[in-house]
Each structure stands twice: as C-alpha cells, then as structure tokens.
Image (tube, rainbow over all chains, first blue to last red; front, side, top):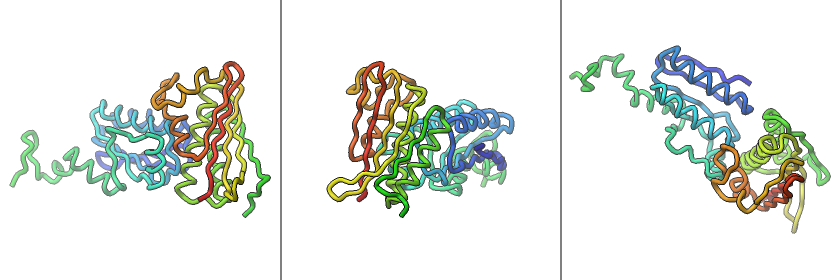
Length: 135
Length: 137
C-alpha cells in the first residue's frame, strides 16, 4: 500500500496507512528524500496515528528518513504514536533517539513552524537575515 | 468467540508481504482469545520480529499460531520455524545489540522481553524454531 504524500505550504505530510510492508516503507523513504528537494520543503511530518505495529525495521526506516531529510536540509517530525505502540517500542528497545516526535499533526506543525521559522518569515514578524523580530 | 483450543493458523513466510499477513492473522487470533489493545500490539510486534528473522536469515519458513492453556490460563503460542542456516550461538543472538545483519540487533532479545515464555531451539545447518507464549491476564 502506497503512503500518500501531501504538500502543505513549505511542508510535506506523509500519512501512514494501516498495514505497510518493508517495501512500502522503503518506497516512502525514497519518495520523501526526493520530494523534499523537488518542492524545496522546509519540513516533513510523518503521521503514524493509524499504525498499530512498529517493529525494528519500521523504526529503523523512520530514523533513516529523519536523518536523510536532515542531510537534505529540512526538518522531520514523527507524529501520532499511540500509547500501546509506544509501550511495545520501549520494551523492544526502539527509542528513536535523535528523531523529533510530537503528539499529533497539530503539534507537529507547531514544532516545524518553530524549527523552520517559516511562518514568521511569511508574517513578516522576523527580519530576514538578522533573525530578530521586527517590532 | 470463534477461536477454540484446536485452532492452528499456519502462515508461510518468504517475503516482506508475508510478515504483514502473519501479524494480521496473529492479531485476529489474539483478539478472538480476548487480548486487549496493548497486548494485541505486543503480539503483532513479536510476530513481526520473528517473521522478519525468517525472511532475513532463512529466506523461507513458517509462523504457526495456536492457543494454549496452562494452570487455567489461556494464551497464544507463536512459533517461528525455518530450515535455514540456524543460529551458531543462541546466547549471543539473545544479547541486545548483537546482529549479524545490519539491524539494531534488538529483534530476538526484544521479542523475549515482550512475551511471558520464550524459547529458541537452533542447530547449525538445520534451522531454527522460536516459540513465544503470551498469557491472557
């Protein structure tokens, strides 16, 4: 099953479907790494809300995605880990260290906004180049 | 409840798509046995790790799912069998972070932490059988 990638302003949003095979995950990884350049995206949100299993392969692929996207100059945040998935992951030793996570899509967008300052630029509240807000 | 003590589900595992099928079947059986949300995720995760090991190391094998009862407790039995190269050192394979592939090396020790009973029988050149049991609380 393909993972749809939506373009939302400066961000890409990939929403996981229920059951993904290893091949699906690798296709998603490749697509995101390519599209982040094509659309000159500043951030990527991977939404795993409907996911009910996160095993070591899926976890490693998510980490790879986040690291590759960073090398491409954008930020990644994983959103929507369910309580039982978080529990199983910690028991397995899959802590996704170094990969930003957020509660849900809304929090993920907020995180990216802070991280990339895209919104501030658009609203003109931050002066380009100086990094200081205009009063 | 349609799952009976005689229920046995066999899933042939030889590609990554079969891993998905195996954990779906396991989740369905566990659900019929009365396992709740967190345990369903745990059972599906264990099946995923064991099935992945089959694909990765033995290329082909089988996940056998069944029910078991012990001291009045009902549980699910997950058996992963293959006729692959076997694990030369099961003690080493059970250590966190040990891997002969390029993975985290958390599959087997992680799966063990997730279940109540865990057993590996492996002979070099003859294959591996992993049996994991989770009891209904």
